[in-house]
Length: 185
Image (cartoon, rainbow, N blue to C red; front, side):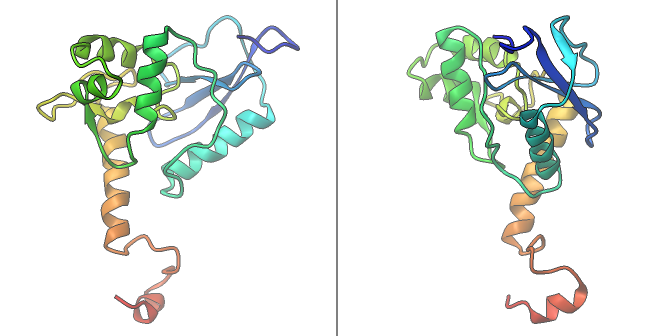
């Protein structure tokens, strides 16, 4: 779906630890996330909208350990099966992973492991729909549109936050070493 006013998708870019990321919206919601090696579609025009500004802010918070879940309207376009997979991906908690088989079982299609992988590959809104949290049944990192190094980075980012938060290393009330003395462990 394209923006009703212009017939084009709006696109803006944000610098991140994994390179420049493009975010697009189509008037209904966020429709695409592009990694630095991906070219925008011909129907995309670089123009920031309030929704894209919000998406940029949320991505910056995510990379800055300040956001675990995205609160953005999404415009997902795919088959009924693909959309079911993408919704299941959104239920994977931050800092955790699931196998393709677990996602297939979650959506009631336990033998559709390969189809889940293909749906994962067609996810146009990576990171926000966290397909990076899906791994092989043996724990191996397999397939990711942004590349395996990016998938590895995102999983480490999330797991570091979870571990550090449990250890109170990233508590918001600890800004300096003086605050450590005040904190009750």
